[in-house]
Image (cartoon, rainbow, N blue to C red; front, top):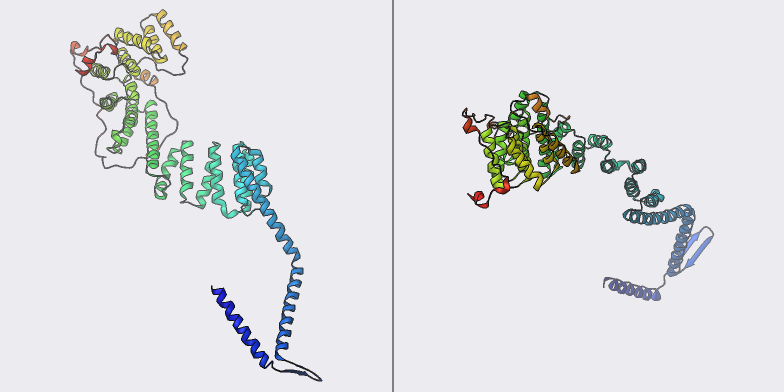
Length: 477
């Protein structure tokens, strides 16, 4: 609408001007020395306009001629960029199709002509990584840096990710440390650095990162909790290793200090309590370990807790009564049957132990059960039966390393430590759990129930029949 109005206004002005010229075309006299020029005003205006237009096009032609090389270069550049864009699209498709060698060729062919050269090189580096060509990967990353040095952080993060995928943890650590020097508070740099420390078992370095990880929000709440738990478990493994080296008093002090730093919620975590119980057992505090395990089994089944209980040197009456209660409640669980046999063996109740192991190898045979039965028969001098049991254990085809028979109370502490079925880590973790509001609570009591001197009271024995013999009526009573 606006264009129509402007057109009408111009048309009106033109008509008015033409009418004015018709009445009076004007007179112009130009004189210079002996020369003079007489003409009307209209002719002069038209001549000047024509001259201006002619000069304009002449100047444009001269400039165009002068710029022909530059125009040719621009045209060639646009053509190469279009080709590079096509190669990028083709290379990404080949990368998605798994044709990694051809993808590298397509992505690198015209990368230098593209406005997104860094995308070409990073994609080619990923293709080389998928082809397990680490040298080619690093070469592509180097070209990406040469193309755009300002993108050092992005390129470095891509390199660290690829190195972690290839399990080159030491190289990834070096890359991330350089990036951390450049951007100390970058959340993703800190996140990858924490993951690298975990892979390298560098728990002390990870503990030193905790504050920065929290402040930078590198992990969400659940992620930070998982990291703290890993640090916590490593600390307990370190304590266990100290105990197995014979420094049990020092290990006990560390257990007490670590227990005071756990929160009430953490003390309700069954898996955490089992790890504490393992540390107590390694430190010779079997009663304290039992005081952590027994409440777990009152609430729910926990296989690791039951397996550990068979190795605790406890008051005979307490141990047998606890096992009997678990048998009534949980029934024919293979680990529980094996633990029942181990408890009987510990207190030299050979017949009961043989009954449980025989039932277990008959109904739910396992390499561990056959090994325990073989060791029991050897202890009793039944060499033929022991040989048959060892052959049966070997025929199970498992690779499980089963501990020897639990130690009787009269054996030396040294032998007990040697046969303890816990790993001895060689990485020492730091104190990593922050102080909690429950520091005032004490470590679980390590005091055993005093045994009664009356032999009749102490000779509480598990029933000869296996757990399957318990009827539903006895379970409900």
